[in-house]
Image (cartoon, rainbow, N blue to C red; front, side, top):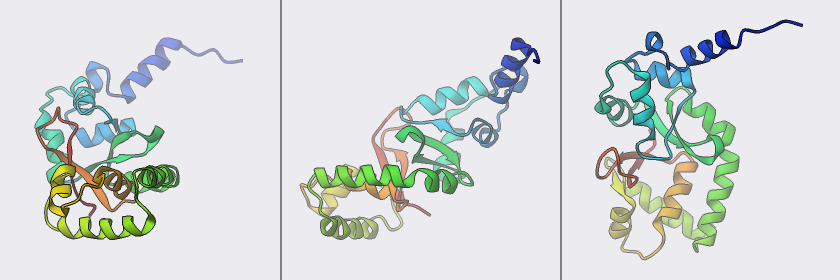
Length: 183
């Protein structure tokens, strides 16, 4: 039986996760690739994760990759939580997890009062009003002139790959996302 050096194993893991001084990099895309994504359920989580993995972190760099260049995206996948993934990894994670999350989102939308027919009607309207722009759930609700729980539909549309959670309304600490078409 082989003996393993626990310190060497721990060092390797820390290196691969960019958690040692000599493995830190300012390449946000590389960090996201190497770590398999950034956990993003909390608004500040991805920023803190990058802060400890980079030499000179600037929070606007993540915002630029997510919302301007769109090299990264935020989707619900592993463990049903939001993660920031590279655009190359998004289709893989989406395909691997979509059945589970889409089914749960459909049940939630039904629980909130949306039949399949009502969902189809409202989701088409949402797709039309989001052409070329981003809006929050409350802005969408106001535009639709409805009292329905639009958030339930937005979650399902995101889980179906129709919409993407975009820039937070009030900055990096805000959990209130804007939504835009997935492209």
